[in-house]
Each structure stands twice: as C-alpha cells, then as structure tokens.
Length: 72
Image (cartoon, rainbow, N blue to C red; front, side, top):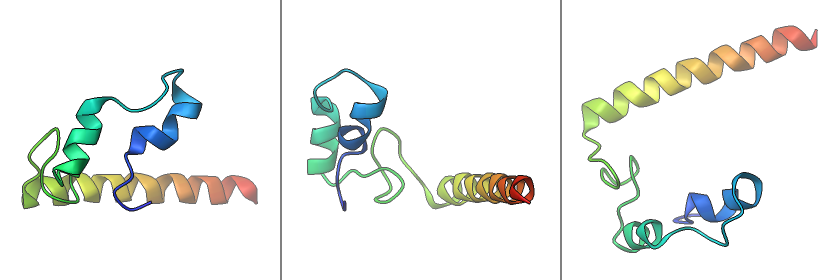
C-alpha cells in the first residue's frame, strides 16, 4: 500500500466518486506525501509533525483503553 492514494481505497466506503481527484495523484507523483515527506497540502515541519503525532497517539491509546475496559 506504499504511496497509495488514501482516497482511492476509502472511496468505496465514503463516497460515490469513481476515484481520487487529480490533485491527490499529482501530489503523490511529486512525492508530496504529507507528514511522511514533510509536505503535501500543508508543509509539515518537524515540530508540527511531532505535536500532531503525539496528540493522535495519545487519543488512540485513550480509545484503545476505553474499548478494552468495555470488553470486560
């Protein structure tokens, strides 16, 4: 799935569109992969990337713990 355009595999569940738009394809073809490459729709500097990734990780851990508690 490396360098696969995210919308191309999410569209079946989220949209009636036939595929991702040209803007996604163009960005991927240019190697602009978002946080992974440091740019895409936005410029991802190291500090911003670390902050966002830390918040996302904290939230994921919270929900994983919540789900685990509700299984018991």
